[in-house]
Image (cartoon, rainbow, N blue to C red; front, side, top):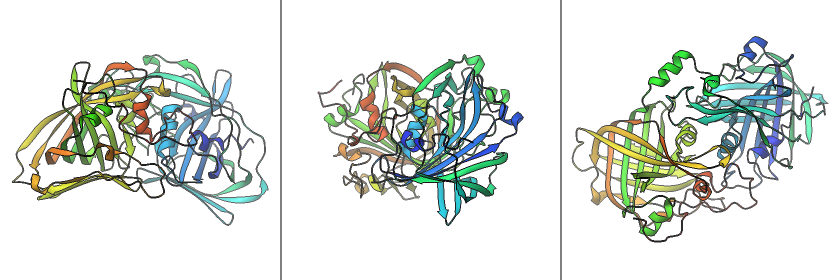
Length: 538
């Protein structure tokens, strides 16, 4: 049995730094062959003796940074498979608890990664591990370390990644995925310094993994070195061939069993074709229009965008109770800059901070939202409101005030949104246009009571400042309101133009390092103000 399977390379592939400490295990299972065969998309087939492999690990950073602000974990469930003469492993589901790892896994390698809480502990000779996704336990496992060392044979088998791009219009033929392709991801072998064979004590999971076939646990003092994996295209698929398959799970459902086919049924495809919008069915909202210095506004916009002589930003906070984006309530904050591009006037999305279990993946990959996880908080009472944006222990923005008069009747509105969507692997990017519509009861805020701040201090222990909204000071609010009993609908997007030299404008939404870049020794300070001021582009 080849136990190494290059497990130790995964923290490095997903963003760990040299000197970080790793703890990890791998476990094999004998799956039901008939059920396993149904999990494989076109172009893949089972080998004679299929295996399921679960790998899970944690990383303790040597030093706190924007890319690794705290200890984090990763896990992956794979199925052995064959693509022609190539034998490898198909990732059925990956889990991570680090944003850099999530971006690299999905945007660089096309892996079906989702956000989750991951725990791994060694107490005496007992190894315990757990995965919690969207607040629901999906795996709890206990193993006993044995006296014998794990087998030393390395397994250089590649990953066979079946992936694609999210569709701008989910109503298209084939559902939510376009450009479906099968790639081979090579993985250099890397193993922990000390590995011990393990026996299974208990396993609690809704996944039917099959009969236990053995496992190991180990740890190492530093992340593996060596080159990162190279991706080789094996095959592309037409829409008819790929119809319904969506291993990347759009929209995301972190609790879907990876042992059910990642394929929409005919009924689901029909319902998707008839779906008109992504719906936020119940929410409260806070909306601020603010003026900023012309130079700051100019520096926010990509070069093909014109300012129209309006150096105005829009800051939007949402408390969402029910939506198509998550089975759980969530809160999110948006920062927009007014812009005109390709004859369309709208609000260019500069920053989107959302709390788990809100969506920071589907919107980012399908519609170009600048999504990152954080801690926004929107509170609206009958008489006042407060709105806070925080991330990595640092407050990025605050607004609060009292209402003036009573809520009006139902207010209707539209928000044309402009976004920047990167193509897989960073080949190029697109400027997209998407219409949001909303309804609700609107309260006006008394200007005399309004308070807004965008503090500058960095979070303790971080060498760089996260989410530099403070660069936009001074902010001058010109209109503030709050909405209750609200609803929002987000339509399919359309591409306005393709842009090859987009990297600097994408970097801040990746905390300074692009997903397809190797991690530098010293990341650059993320900045919203990309373009040097050059006068109004009206």
